[in-house]
Image 1: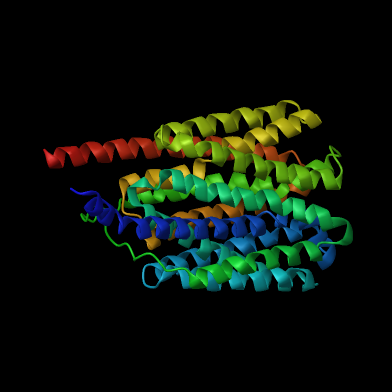
Image 2: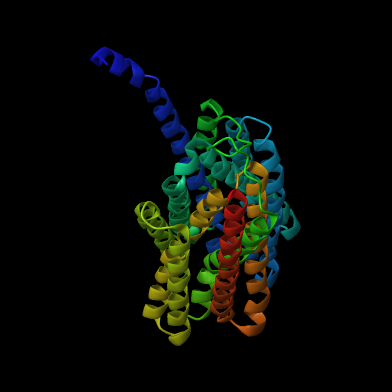
Length: 404
């Protein structure tokens, strides 16, 4: 083959590579936006309670509102991505998120604020499903490192959000929310201009793997438990630290940012690990690290050092659980928009129940209930993960017998 023929044969690959990179960059930007919005609620809970003249247990219903919206958005989004070009859908949803976030400081009554957070949650859920599903369609069986990268950029947004809120918290919460809304607008416009990947309905080898309903259910339950502890701790660590007089309000906002920052760093470190270790090994290590971190928080409950070490350790330990479980799912079934929606239904329900239940028990039992509930979540998640591995091994053995 001549040099000219070799160069010509490589030309069609270049636009494909460039297209994949531009799409991946778009999903990463969308997940920064998701992180910005998701992490804003925790540090602003006391301010929103003051704005609506409610108690902490009452304002915790915002977690339920957002998660109900997230659940609805996940299911509707899953169907949309299986039927329509995905990028215009994501662009429009980000604009809905912008409008909803901008309205938050204007809501003086709790039920009005609940309605806004339902809208925020619906947009978040549909964007979350879209980013994860379309990334799988773009990169197919090589999605592992890119999936960890996607959730790393969620952590970037979640890390920046409490810092932005903390900069404006002395003047109230309004400017913090407005700045976050403005930051999302360019991402929404970007998706309106970005070509969508083709809709994926079959396995990448064309064989149309049969989805395992038991496996789908186990992964959904696992996500329920994982998001319960991730969102619960991230949502209540600010109030936990201030109510125990472990730190000031401003430093508690930075502690929240440190938690999401550790989660971000953990996802960055997990990108090369995803190319060398299997998903089951990574998740087992993550759960072990989470247990150690929670025990640090429980053994020295009045220590600022233990609070920081445990918080940073927890964030870094659980960082890669979500994207790695999605990669594990991709290895064992065809990941359609609707299947991803079931996964995120479990996640959104966890994001609803976990933080809300912490809020209900926070005032009646005390701040330490936050850490005890995280411990229970880690233990139960480990049990479900073990059951999941048993089922996967059993299914693989049955598949081998059918082939033989």
